[in-house]
Every structure is written in structure tokens, then in C-alpha cells.
Image (cartoon, rainbow, N blue to C red; front, side):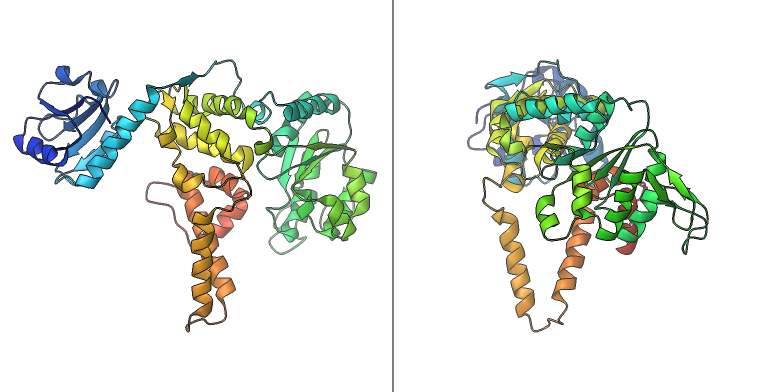
Length: 464
């Protein structure tokens, strides 16, 4: 790859060291004055001899690689915080220098090709991002939201996980006649059955061990407004009968209280399961199914509305880039092409997290394919399984089953370690933000907190 590469240093040893690595294929110039290096594509900045003060000026037009012989976290943190492309320690490792240089020149080349600027006309709230797009299937969803919003009937939202059912429910609330009243959300899949009943109906002091005070439930909290029962297909049959009573009579009892309470609520429910099959298998109450399925809105998978991806990318970028103070103007063609080729098994939620990561790591005003790490994360296409994940797991399980040290508890061991890894990776990905980690895992914060205590996972020093 071609490009103007400059070493900004006053130390001849650094020049000799870098020239040895870049002897073939790269044209390296040595300079000692920042002004001479301002138009370079890549600048190796020797902070030990020149200092780090020039970084702010250089990074405006160049990719800056900080070079230092002073091991430790100081330059790593400072240089990356203030816009360096990378930080390299001396003695320089050839493979690391070549890899980071090729990456920088690759990004430069990609952003010099066809670009797709954002139009800046899309609102960027969480709700609008869920329903932005021009695809025919999404247009039908939007029509239904408008038609049923102000009609006080139950709505059942169906579709795969991550398609934005919770945000569509919020959209219905915002256009309904109850928009000034509460919108209460409860994830039926994330809360154990014994706790879910207390969450829904509330309880009186002394109703069970640990009930030291009385507490209202979600139905009371939603009185006059809308309650959204997310993933209702995971609710037990016994609890379904109690929810049915609320729908039929608008009455219920708190746990430990014989007095009936009356509520005026509208119910929106969602599921990623086939409730009709569950009714046939007697896993879901038929009478409750007919009660909640007055109007059904099916949310299409993202792979069925790929033409909406460019608008979704703009919406998510507008929303998150402003939060972290980055001015992202658009994307490269290769970035969009790769997004369009992928089948998005995690749907809109997966796309949202992919864009957030790309924004966090981009070094240019345009999102590029180099922020996607497709070789690691976007390997799923069509009906193919992600073999980079499945096969190593299958081999590990097979080896454990064949091992002479197998103690007969392989099932428990695997589930235990898998859950620990899920928790740790979700926390790392979210920057140790509990709310975001819980959302990535599809559980609520209380469940996340309980599991962190169960696995004795502690936060890094300085993070709480």
C-alpha cells in the first residue's frame, strides 16, 4: 500500500530501528519538525525525543503511531485518549509495526474510495431507530401501529429476539390515548416464576420470608396506562391464569392480601415463541391467548428488510456518536456492503451494538470495514452456523466427555463456565456498565446483580 510515511524523531537509533523493519515496500521519511509532517498519511511519533504535545495537531490529518521506550500504562492511556492510532513500545516488534501500518493505510485507502455521507434528516431516539426504514414489511408495521395506537385493545407483538418488539410497544404507547399515563415494562423471561408473581401483583408485609415492607406491583404501577408483558410465552401456566383474571375482571390481589384491587390498564404482550403451537401442546392457556391476541403485529427479522440497513446505520450513528462527542459523517462502501451481506441473527439489537462498537473505534469521520472485525464476529450467513464458534465448542465438549477425569458432571461444568464467560464478556463489551450488560444478555439488572454475586465477579478497581 502506498502512502506518505513519516518518522518524527530526533533519535537516530529510532530511525535505524524503524528502517530495518520497513526496509521493503514502504517509503519512510525522517523529520524532526512537526510542520513538515502535517500532510503525512502516517506519522510515527517518537515521544521520547519529540514529546507528545504535537499529537493533537498531527491527528487531524494523519494516523499517528506513538513510539516510546518507557514501558507502562501512561503513554498507552494518554496517547489513545488523545487520538493516537496506536502506541508501540521499543524495541519495536516487526509484526506489530507492519500490522498496524497496513491497517492505517488500508483505512486511508478505503476512505479515499466511494463514501456514503449521512443526510442528517433522521431522528435518533431509541423508538424511531426501531421503526426507521422504507421496506414494505416495515411500512405495514408502521401502518398497524398508527391504526391500533388509539384503539384501546390488547396487542400481541411477535418476532425473533432483537427485532425491537419493546420499542414498538413504546411507540404504540406514545400514540395512544394513554400516553400521559405510565408505560410499565416487565420481562417475563428474565425473572424467576416465584419472583415474577410478586413483581406483577405486589405483596403485603410478611407475605413471605424477606417481605419486610409492603410493595405495589407492576399492574398497580401501570394503572391508567399500559403494561408491556415482554416474552409472555415464558410465563408459567399457573401465573397465566392470574394474568387472565386481570384481563377479564380488571381485579387482582396482592400476595398476602385478601382485598381485591381494581385497575384500568391496557396490555401489550410480546413473544418470540409460537404461541399457537404452545396452546396445542397445552403449554400456554388458550383463553389467555385469545385475550391478548386481539391485534397481532409481526416484526420482521432484519434479514427480511435489509434495504433498511443504511437508514438504521444512520439513525444509530446519529444517536450514539453525539453521546460520545464524535462527528461521524457517513460510511464507506465496503462497510455498508459487509453489513448488507450479513444475515443478522441478532437482528436490530445486534446491528445497534455493531454500530456502537464501530463508532467507538473509528479513527476517521467515516465508518470503515476495519471497525467491524468481520473475521471474528460476522461469520454467519444464511442457514450456515458460525463454525468459528461451534466447532471449537463441540471439540471441547467431546474431549471432556472422553476424559478419564470425567466426574459425571460435565453438563453442570459446561453450563457453569459458559454462564461465567457470558457475564464477563458482556461486562467487558459494555465497559462494565451494568444496565448495558443486562440488555446485551437479555436479562434485567436484578438478575445480573444476583449472578455476579453467585459467580463472585468483582468490578475492576475504580469501577462500581
